Image: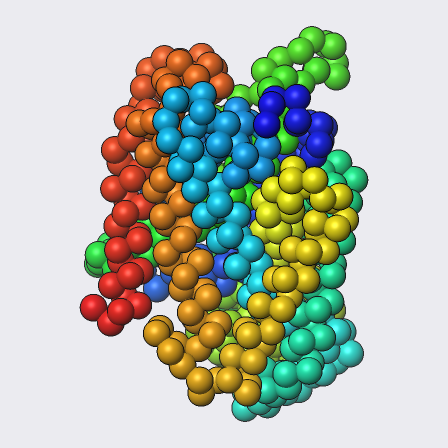
Length: 466
């Protein structure tokens, strides 16, 4: 593959298109419930400070490295790593980073589509007033009933996968970019509107206190590992999405006012993405917990918070049909912006191997859909069929999220910090401050690999019951 192959996929038309796309990849279902809950459980503001430190020392440096590798290679993660390995005169086996990331994203897409499909069902049911006056037992029964209905879940999974791959099939400029240009502003508008609404509820002060009170006594080793893991996973690192999005990132853009060409900074761009991702997570907490506390409910971790507790709250509050529907549209937007990035690395690789983009998207989407059937069945017919770490869904999730992603992030840091020629890295990053470059290089070579290795081992030990 040569540099001239870049036009096969196209480019983002602007720096902000890349920022919206990468932020969309980072913002997902985990931002909506996992980060706010962690903040509340592990010391509020104290946890947020630790999380921000982890973002700065682990998330941002690895994301900078991944974008740099992607823009330098200009192709899918697989061919990018083959090209960079050849330029660095090292073994072509380093292309395994690309294969690992693309496969991880593909496997995550297979079950992510199932979970995200729930949001489509809840948008419809919420808009129909299905939760009005519902009891706690009724809300739980509604959720469990949906999970027990394999055909309903399969239908939602199918609809969401079709929506995802339709966007991917349209290409970078007509599909991915146009989608994020609609989804991300809509997400921000909906989020701001819901935060404003939440500020008028009786439980707003309690919700703010739950998330932001400083309780350093809760900063245990478990809390630090939670912050470290969340910082890594929230930025979509190690799954090929950021690398392939980086491949579509222009090196220079023309200023509309002055007409002059200026270089697009990877570091400052990644910083904006990390900031927006964190703001969305914080905003989600400012929406969720005031609503929960205003209705005298207890916050719960996991899908139950989104699909049991919140629908119960919306069913008991004035204008709950409208607010609840808007909320689940918000969740759907965040899920869709993430899912399109999960499918893109594998699709880009198939396009480079000669398939047309629509056919490549169909092949990836159909295969992921078939694997996703295993996840659908894990909640009903196969729920009692367990092996290794649990159900089919739990095994796929553990393999992709807990093993493949951290391993991919670790290898990216090692390649960017130790294998890739320093002259190439410096040229691609083009940092104006040599001191800032040296800090990044030291962090990506030493701090980030150790931190990601800790995340990897912690997940492995936890899954094996250690």
